[in-house]
Amino acid sequence: MIRLGAVNIDTSHPKAFSEILHAGNKARYVAVYNDGFRGDDEVEGFIKMAGLEKRCSTIDELAEMVDLGLIHGCNWDTHLSYIEPFLKLGKPVFIDKPIVGKMGDVKKLREYAKQNAVILGSSCMRYVPEVTKFLTIPIEERGEIVSIFSVCGVDEFNYAIHAVEAIGGLIDRGAVSCEFLGGSDISGTRGETYIVRYNNGVIATYSLTYGIWQKSVMTILTSKQTYILELRGYDALLDRLVSSVESGVVKTAPLEDLIESIMIMLSGRISREQGGGPVRLADIPADDPGFDGFTFERSYAAAAKKLYI
Image 1: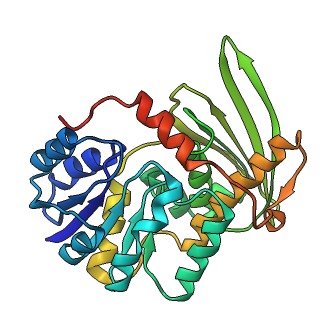
Image 2: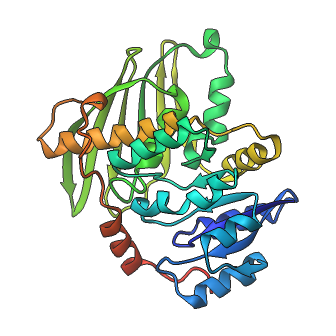
Image 3: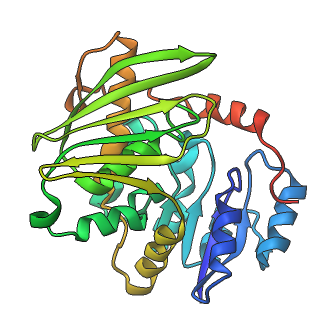
């Protein structure tokens, strides 16, 4: 049985992941470390719900107990501060979406990659069966991808990363630029649309709404027909995490692919702030402030309902 350790239980993912894992017999959460906004009552609730062995007082203690650490904090600006104890022990770590939110942390991730650190991630939408099934269709039958349209809801980064990661599941890597196309405000609902240009000529657009949950849906136009995919589920992501630990071979996307999704969204944010126009990923300033994880954490915590009692 693969032993998993949860670092923070800010989001619903530890609960949902645990429920899925308990339906099988390959992996379980066995311990938790929490210094996030969830109170002791919810930590105890998670311990009982998931049948954990222990609440750890340090990350080092947690890392010693488990085969894989899962960083579930909602503040992406703190994600990298938790991973060192796992990496020192040669253990893999999963960083929940979005893995990071600024170029300074992108640089750190690349340094970890050079050290052969095993960092897994990130959005489940990259791995859902609808995406992988599409890719198994012979190109002669489905045609070459011409353009992709991906939609999501709720917010500009924490949730909208799903839309960009889903695109990445189809194209892998090669984004050149991202451009803010425009926004709208209909009956108090803000919507925005961005276009990503790839070095193979493919274009992808992603649209999001603020404050409103939307189904994750992609429309794929190929040289032969149109495909509409409704994306859902954590199962495929969890299967890849478990398989990565079992086999010792990374089954999730390469770290540089995950980084590209972050850089696409950073370019889009810069374009929006500049009033539009394409912003090349290669031109993102090293000191760009990125997306503010601490501000997001405060708003997320203020709106969060209790999940683990």
